[in-house]
Image 1 (cartoon, one colour):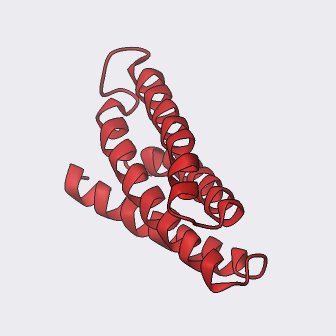
Image 2 (tube, helix red, strand yellow; image 1 turned 180 degrees about the vertical axis):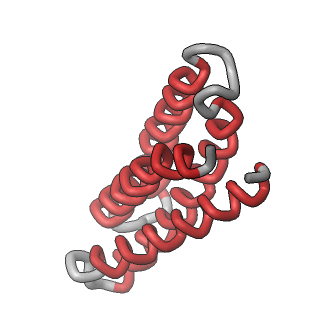
Length: 124
């Protein structure tokens, strides 16, 4: 599968996971302010995940140096953590619902991050 096609497939799967998670989280976070915070978190998570997957994909098993996949995956995990840590004060400055913003961002990161190994294996 070509890089662009694999990235498009990952984008579709990630978008579907984020939409489903948003619908479920809307049962917990019910106000308009919380929904706005979740939408901003969804956009941020989608962009970060696409960048992370694009960085991770060239190191598929059997396609790079030994250990390269783990190193690239670790860099992506650290990148997500940095985004989360920087997003917290930014959400406060933007007067977003902090609970909804951070819980939704972590949920989106977790779900899409769990899809990465499955898609990398499928993509072989």
